[in-house]
Image (cartoon, rainbow, N blue to C red; front, side, top):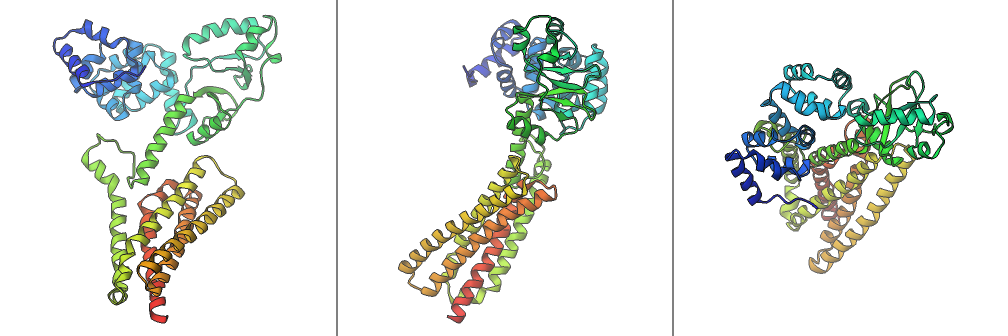
Length: 452
């Protein structure tokens, strides 16, 4: 059942903190999920959140720390001493989560925290993970896993698994390695249980195991896990040695972050920004696209100025400027969104991309024809001017086709040059379509009113 955080609940917590009633606070927080506690702390000031947090036991405290948004977590850790961070939090975390926490610390604090970790093996795992690039498979993998040697028997495996399982929260797969720790396959726990204890592992494990290199991009990891419905995937180095595993929750975090970043790009915000960032950081993230919008507006005004005589002669042309601009922008964004979604889903085959391009253009052709007919009927029966009717209808048809082609092509070009195609679905494509849509509209209008 989902916990509902009410204003009354927060006020009660504040009262208990002010009264220094730690026992009742502990009892109140005990049944809550770490995600709920993190949400509660978000409604408290820094001193109150710190007081409440330090009452939690080590394992729950480490789980809560992971749930706290990154920008809040950085500020929170700055007010805690290094030895407390190491002993109360890092000690209870999986290596990948611990590495993420340590990576966010300032360099001096990072070194102090690493020195305070008593478990040298865990500290070594964290240092190893910090060596990998943040957006690589090595950067998001965890060292904790269960592995067995291919030369063991079932009895030996069961004994070793019981020892290794103490360090692993969830056992999704048992990995089989050779004497050089190279990954050989994956073993089912069910097979271990159902077979005699003297059975040797080579007769049981599945050699067809999907894995990724430590250097693989997070996008590639997400695509493979999604394609093969994996809840975890092993990570190997360049010579096939087993280095760690990536679980589905790590991939979900990445997918969510990518979705947030793409949404910001579509909205015309560059960079990774958070609501609590400083005003200057927010201004800097929004400024580039706002500048593009300003330049686009000026260029649009220049287009209108170039056709001032036509507008003054046939004022009805001005009535449909918002229609042309809006339809161009909407069609362009729709087409680019379809292509970006296709790229994000892992489509790499040229023939498949070509088919999707042709399909999108066919859809746009039919859609443009329908809307051109609709606006033709409206103008024919309401406006009564055949030149205006033909100008608007033909312009709308051409503009929608062009906008669809432009919106489909640009993401493909950006992706070809290793630029995030999500850029194409933002103000950039809308502004370009508005300007060129006006050129087409007035060009067609001028032709009809000058020559017909």
